[in-house]
Length: 253
Image (cartoon, rainbow, N blue to C red; front, side):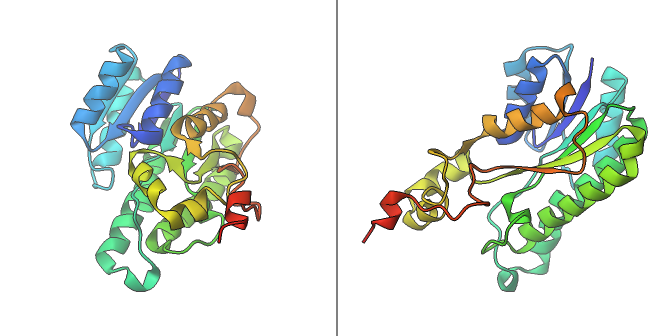
């Protein structure tokens, strides 16, 4: 039985990923900050034999070893690491103070770096690491600031790991979601500028869902992805690679 560590597992992409990987027969180590959300995850999966959770600040010094210890104590191995925990609502460079910079880099670059560093010694050939980045690590975007810096750094780290640990049979890849419909995004769909930028410029007839991203992560964990290493798979309906504009936007006054 494979064992998957998932950070940010209490909701959104992390929760959807936990559900998909559990359905594939894997054991889940769900990590998050909110114990109530993690309790809801345990209740939904309803499988004490294959689910363990840990409420911890992923950016804390003690977090990586605590996560590794839990995985090994409960399941005796680690096959998959999914660095998914993240923050939103960044500001442009000129509006970003040092505290915000440290927070974004701490959660979305330093924490994945340290957790991967502690996990890799326990991985066997056939293991995989998946870092959830963003389209803001693929294209330039306004208001990216520290968020873009963190996600871009995580992409570069992934490429290093793919080269360094690929010979050991450990694959490292990125999944880069575009705007994905979650509770944090739904209210913004009423904003005309937000819809123009994200809905009207996406060739796909809908925005992405957490299940879209989770399915891509699940594929990278599967036997069918055994020769995929050092790649970024963008899940954005074509937003970042086309110059699309919807007929409604083209004809808007």
